[in-house]
Length: 373
Ligand SMILES: NC(=O)c1ccc[n+]([C@@H]2O[C@H](COP(=O)([O-])OP(=O)(O)OC[C@H]3O[C@@H](n4cnc5c(N)ncnc54)[C@H](O)[C@@H]3O)[C@@H](O)[C@H]2O)c1
Ligand SMILES: C[C@@H](O)[C@H](N)C(=O)O
Image (cartoon, protein in one colour):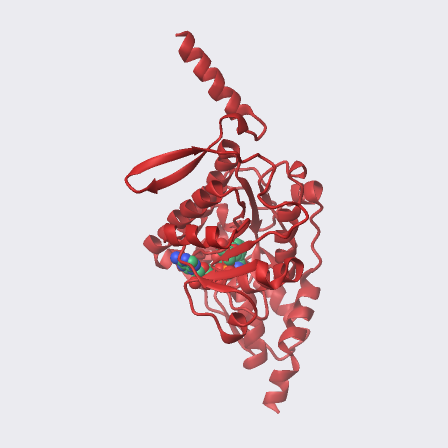
């Protein structure tokens, strides 16, 4: 009985510790050969494996999607071109391939991923590979594999090699029973998409590895991200990117969500800025490991009105996609990001008018008018 009591006391202390299980931390190591092994970790809770005067050595998984190339550009500016490796399972375009290191990496191949981390002495990992909400509903087994099994591989390798790990979560990690206006950091999370379920799993597993093994896990819940020079992949918020391209190319846009569907959105520069800021924030500043970040919320109708200020002849029609609409109706309408603002000074730069002006200056709003003439 006394043994049972002291074991339970030790477990209770671990669970209640404010984040440091250092005394007994053991990192999980996969089967090497035939027997599973556990190796005592010297990972200290707040440290990373490069000296503060050096730049981190960065790996980005799933880097050829909407966000990865822009992230690589930002990080290379800060840490040097050769310190940031983009990876994906797709073939990069020439300009991406020649802009800095690129490597093939399938996150479902644990040994290959580990080899890349070891051979390149990676210290920071940004885990961007995923199937997004609509793509996930179209192929649940693949979404489960990439978003859940892939995350497990990344977590184990990050813990084993003492990496600082960033995993993005999403407004999609909330569901119809969450408070939607606004949605705080801590509340009911019962999403109804495989994407949302996998992201809640990622948040919880990352935080568990943080408390259990000392993994330096950091996570932001992104809103729908809007970018000019990269295409979104399989998301419910895609309409908010497509409208710009269609306004310029054809002057006609068919929206797959209802005109009054309000969702949190963000311009890509703000998203990437927040990502770098939270990764550089001192550990002591982080009262949590998963934060909401927010910039603006709008409906398709409100976005269309703002776009029409630049392309007045734009015609918008609505042809609602039932799957995407059901997903959007279960997501937050407004995001409460007060903890991010308080803890590490998060502040967005782009509101709706600024976003629309920036998108058109990037895409060249005159080109459609020029083509039409
Ligand atoms: N874009 C958004 O609006 C948004 C919003 C919230 C969160 N996020 C999150 O940010 C991250 C990046 O989003 P994105 O918009 O760039 O996604 P995306 O769909 O555009 O790109 C995902 C990338 O993952 C790659 N991938 C798929 N399977 C893989 C595998 N087995 N191994 C390695 N790579 C694989 C794909 O080839 C693709 O290039 C994702 O985790 C996403 O959930 C994005
Ligand atoms: C919101 C986000 O996670 C993604 N853009 C999606 O719509 O699936």
